[in-house]
Amino acid sequence: MFELAWFSIKLFFQGKLLRDPLFFFKQVGSGIIISCLALITLTSIGFGLWLPMIISSFLGGIAMPFLLKDIKVGSIKNK
Image 1 (cartoon, rainbow, N blue to C red):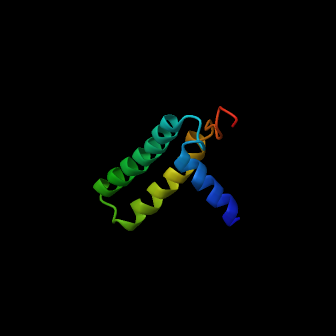
Image 2: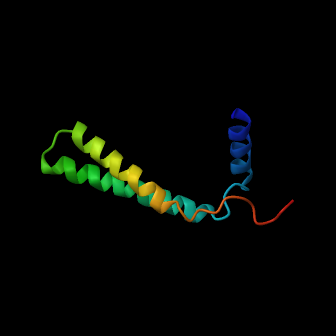
C-alpha cells in the first residue's frame, strides 16, 4: 500500500500522473468554490458555525466525484 502511494507521489512530482493537470486543478477549484459558497451562505443566514461546516463539507464531498469523473490518469507517452 505504501509502495503504491509512493509511486503515485513520485509520478505526480515528475508530471506524469495526470494527463491534463490544468483540468484537474480547475475541477478541484470548482469543488472548493462550491463548498466555500455553501459555507458563506449558510453562515450569513444566521446558523452557527458548526452546522454550515458540516453541510458545506457534505456538499463538497458529494460534488467531487461528479467533478472528477473525467480525469485521465497516466502519461500519454509510454517511456
